[in-house]
Length: 358
Image 1: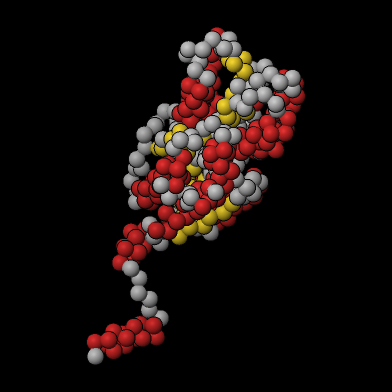
Image 2: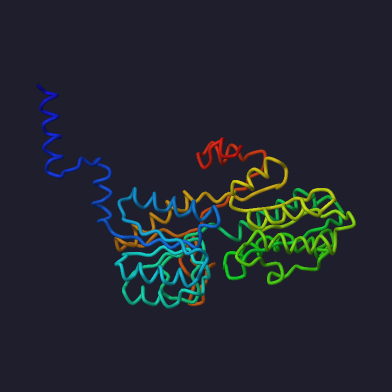
């Protein structure tokens, strides 16, 4: 009899178009009010942005928000149009990972006029007073950790050298790239000045070392030229400072094609699957893991605070000036990954499965 009663209730609910929803989901929906969050990502061409977008969407939806997630295929005009559409479609808040931090002035102005808060995600939005908060990893620390790894790997405190170093920096229109470069060079420059590190190509300034769009093929082409001009006679290249994994992949491809000396220390960032496999194979010495799940959770916390009329938690109010003043920022801490700990950090945490790394 009891089973029939329950079945009857379910039938009535279904007939009336009702749906049984878990209580936690109802509470999240009530707290968020079903508000719409616009999330603008730069591209699907890099693995990390796919993971950023997926993690962000999942975390926001679990908190009860509706999410408009868009990828711009690394086309500035496309991202401008997407953000403008988000504004016209009534988004309550915008989370933007820009392609070019200085290119969104017009839609950001529209957002400010409409009273829509803006959170800059990972890449700082420049020259706009519409930016409410910035959420990212400590990008200067990323560079520091890369530089420190090279110092330790080459034992520069004890060895006289000289050791040969080359530098492959990030995209010139990505504000983060200058922080990565600056953090690393602040560590390495004293050893260059001392003569323990030698950059045989002579290419040390950011503009010369930059890699447009973080493109692997462009990094490979530049490294091909450097090897041909400086290392084709078998001279050892001891270390390559690569700001991220896509540039590191280009460097590794170049070395495989044309380099005959001892394999160098190569740094990276993002823990993309091909690069983690290179870690395991000894083709990349270290990587920097920035757990985008942590950053996504922090952004959700920021969104909830802003839409509730409260101040969001930040831990840096001075370092990130976008040209209109310092933007209140929350910095997550990056982690060094090597062949010795990648399984613990990446697999045991559930970021990757063991099968993905085979």
